[in-house]
Length: 227
Image (cartoon, rainbow, N blue to C red):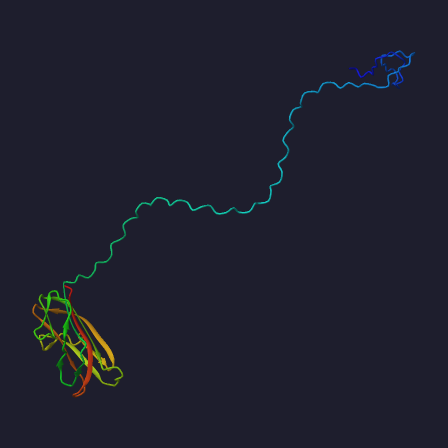
């Protein structure tokens, strides 16, 4: 519509119009319509979407979530490189040993050390009296001997000497197969000796005292062939 005001009856309009406005009524008649009808036009089309606004500030960091479950075990990795070879070990070609726990006496007279038991044997045999070891093959042997002197509570300045022998008389080596043990202590000696097949190895003892001398107890004699 053109914005005009209408009524159903022609009469003089009581509506105050702007100058020059015309509602369709004749001005020499009185309009008896009380109600003025305004008509609304049809809705226009939807406008275009506006542009996207600026991004807002970042929110506060949230709390850390609970740890997840442990994953499945992974596959076994490839084998590593082979390590360097170790040093060559010592090859034992023969062995034998004698030992005893009985109490004996060492005096100023040199006497053979007695034994009453022997250990495993290989390439070595026990002598007829049970107090020596006989080697079957010539070679280099490790000689080891140990002895305990005195009884618990017995102390004194005297000492007992032990020496290795070969074939009942000759000392193996006065510098390496001899050891001196103070009272109430244990001593030992280790040495390398060259032996011939059939050599018989034993142990002798002496002390500075006449009988009854100085007591000694645990002792051990071991031969090991190395070459």
